[in-house]
Amino acid sequence: MSESVRKMLRAKLVVLGRDNSGKTALCVRFITRRFIGEYEHKREVTYRCQKIVDKEAIELEILDTVNKECVGPAASSLESSIKWGDGFLIIYSVTDRSSFEAVSRLKRLIDHVKQTLGIPTVIVANKCDMENGRVVRTDEGQALASDLRSVCFALTDNSTAISDSMK
Image (cartoon, rainbow, N blue to C red; front, side):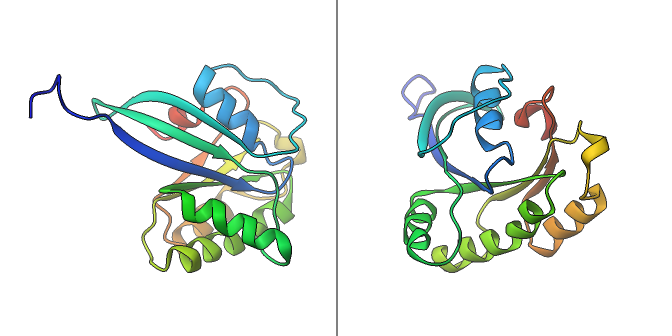
C-alpha cells in the first residue's frame, strides 16, 4: 500500500488518577502545548488530536476521566472507560500520597477488565516542580512502575509536556 493511501493509525488513551493529580492539565498541555493551572472538571471529556509518533501519523482519542473509585456504583463507569481504551496513563501527584496509592488499584483494575497483562500503561508522576510539597519520592514511583510492569514511568511538571518527558 502506498504511503499516500495508508490508513492513519488510531489509538484510544484513557487518563486515570485521583482528583487534583493534574490529569486535565496534562491532557491540555499535550494537545495544545499550553499549561493552564486551574480546572473545574466535573465530567469526562474526550479530546481528539493528531500526532506524529515514530514518523507515523496517529489519530488519538484521549478520555480524560473524573475521579472514580474502584468500588461501588462508580466502578462500573470506570470499567466502561477501561474497556474503551487501548492504552492508559495513570497520573499521580508527588504532593499527594493517596493519589500515589491509588495507582496500584487502578492498574490492577485495568488488568482485570482487559483480562490480560501487558496493556500499554504509563505511570506519570506529576507536579514534580513542587519540591516543597513532595511526599512521594521519585524512586518510589520508579519501583511501583517496575512492580506493575508498566511500559514507562514519566516525570512531569507545569513546564514539561508528557510527550517531552517520554522521549
